[in-house]
Image (cartoon, rainbow, N blue to C red):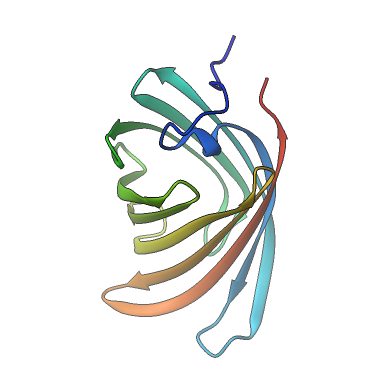
Length: 148
């Protein structure tokens, strides 16, 4: 049985559960390029480690891809490193989180602002860089399906 935790002010608890979303990609002048379904399952595997499993039906510029990372929490910060990525971030408020990702898959630096509109809806605003230059923006909207 997966541990999705219980509702609490514990940092990162709001991420736990199964999420379904859509990732929309835009060029640097705001033109829509494409959209992809995204499926995420996020749960605690230890008291201070959560598993982030995210599948893109079509990761922009790559195709179908599954990320699976174990993210270590220390206070209000978090970090992970694996074959897919290097990740670090901080909780700014209980419902607003900043991620910096170095993706070995897309060969890019990703700056994400995750914010929770309410307990069942999450939005991510993404700015992606390659070789130090901006190349796309993305918006991901997720709905929370379950926590068990």
